[in-house]
Image (cartoon, rainbow, N blue to C red):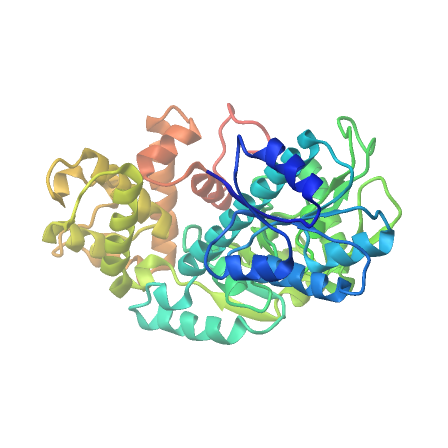
Length: 464
């Protein structure tokens, strides 16, 4: 049962509170702050009701509110008072009171205040828990970095996290740019502030501007109320803009102003909004080429390319494959509630020799599928499904035909990758979702590759 500590001098109000709360809560009633402090040293309570008035001992009461509300774990303090003076209310709320109720009050009102206080306590506890979980997830020391290339990235992250400059992350789809952006935020001085993600490629251009900057009521059809954008919501924190290379030239100009002045206007409004944000941008495109082609603003490129982090593809960090696979296996087993202890040696050998065009995301999908199909305590080769034409070839064949030589021949990899995607699309009747499942990558990753290679089909919409 919920435990409520009541600090009240008036005998009449003690009786009123006892009648109002005894059926739903376990109560302890004290006549003064000294009794309450002694009791709190011995017992814990879920909510505290504190009677407070404008009197010589007001400063002691204010300090008591601060002590009660700031001592972990969070305990909501509801102040009751005969006075409704603004000065008293302001002091109580500033000290940390969760609510202020003027006397006389009804039984329903005090019960409602207690319920609200308990709800706020639950939310605060949940937020604290999630933040602790995020600190574990985004722990730099727990990122798998067995290869020299990834060790260099980790060394760079430790230096960049404490800065406040804009970061540009580059790397192929599925290399973990989103995870690394979170790692930077949650190891930075902004860790207690919002971390907002937005994928510029997943949101239609007509809606992306509203998502970023927000809009006023009536700004466009369907805008039934004013809405704050992601940049405004992240004030004080970090914004991760994935696939920034897909942003239209019109939005690029507006983003340039955000980078320079941290200022913008909502759609349909003239009032300037300032938001203190750190931007981490990411792309799998070569922005230098986009600048040369005139599809990406040169001035914006220089603004986002202050600090640069390149995430190597999985085929360039083969030393990481086995520990990564082990880590992913453990996480996936918890998710699907199945016990699989490891991989057969031939599976690890296959993983190390495969080129992984979908990188870590493809590896994760492959392991998840294998875990679901596996009946033994280890993953066996027959349950590992990789695209047939991407399997490693016999070592006696010509090296130019071996997919492992893609590391030494990027053009060969590109040509082979396009052929592989087209074949999967044909087998799936050009349905991208089914082709992605066949290839072991997400639909988003496949969509990027389709656009990258310029693959088209009459059945698709023009913007695909």
